[in-house]
Image 1 (spheres, one colour):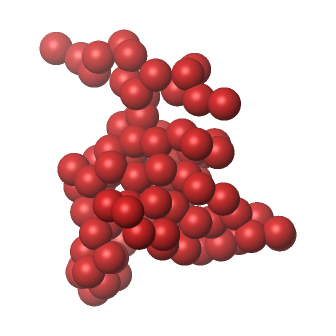
Image 2 (image 1 turned 180 degrees about the horizontal axis):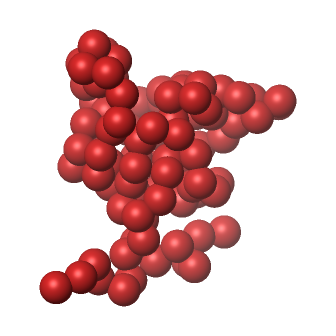
Length: 89
């Protein structure tokens, strides 16, 4: 058994504009994970890259209809399953 070849596991920071994925794993201390859970960031949730600040950090993501800004150091520790990455703009 292996991953579906149409699915790609990547860091949240690797998503480009308009690309989305499903949160797979979060590698942060339990306190940080609990904090993110309050904003709807937990495994199984869909997340879409929206935009970044002028200097590139923080980046804004859409989760369950809400915009959430994350610093790159946090977003790098979140892995998503991205489907059809070639379809994104």
